[in-house]
Length: 130
Image (cartoon, rainbow, N blue to C red; front, side, top):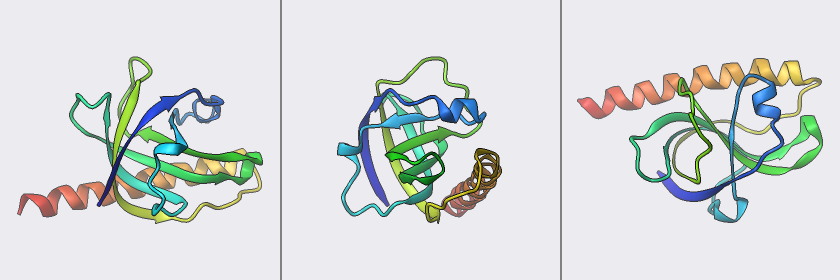
């Protein structure tokens, strides 16, 4: 598994507007060997907390015709404040980056990605117990 730490940087607020708030990470910290895509991962906030289940987007943002990004959405976690940094352990790739006709189509896929990540991370947790 690939692990890296990155400084949190300001984002555009689009994730929050879509009901899927993200923490944007400094692209300079993303390992060169990581392919663009959507990933199930575990992430720790400010290096001093228990890891949280999360989904990560890394790469182009074709729906918004925007520059590439690396963003983490924490599953079932309500962040009380903006983190300074995030440590990410990439568990499994869910899919490649795709273009969608609208932000609503993207939002529907993001919900599917969250479900897929929960299933992947649950399977991993169960297999690690045995």
